[in-house]
Amino acid sequence: MAQSALFQPLRVGNLDLCNRIVIAPMCQYSAEDGCMTDWHLIHLGHLALSGAALLTIEATAVLPEGRITWADVGLWNDETEAAIGRTLDGIRRWSDIPIALQLAHAGRKASTEVPWDGGAQIAPGDTHGWRTVAPSAVPFADGDVAPVALDRDGLRRVRDAFAASAVRAAHESHARPALLHCSEWIPKSLPQPPRPPPPPRPPGQRIPLGNAFCWRATRSARILLIMSSAC
Image (cartoon, rainbow, N blue to C red; front, side, top):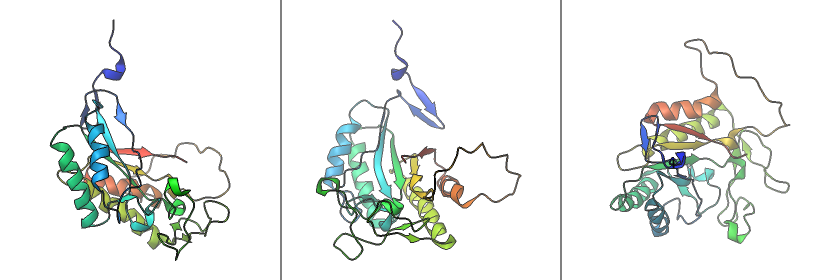
């Protein structure tokens, strides 16, 4: 009987997977000031021994204001990087599973309570709350405080944060590849009809700002890019 393709090896870019089973990112809402805790070592550690080919770390904010909740994991400074490094060092003592990282910015969906406490938006000025930012000043849900609409400099700051976090993720003993979760950065407006594929871009023409999120991150860190969207 032929073996299922699920258990056949697969090569993705320069990454060799022993089978086709990939553990998806699962938010734990158990970080402290963006830093992983012992919970993450337990959670990711047992998954690393599962026999899957790739383990993906949960949505990891590239900026503090990009966290979904106040208890999200982040990767925006030396402290958050060191916390991820300690967790992955512990895992790699016992498992050689490749580890990926989902980089994210929650945009207008940020500043919310943890799910088991309702998951509603926390207003700026309240405990664990902050003013959200997004490509437009449209709130995620009725009754939410509207985000600050970012200008081009603000969008560049977020883009550069993705690139900087990708570089941190690619540091030795950290996660590779990185998975960029950018769906929140589609401006909220009226529904748009499907668009045809864009025409080939002439050499030297500038890349649109939205595409630059992904282009600059991969160019800086030289990582395998996997696009994620969950609108």
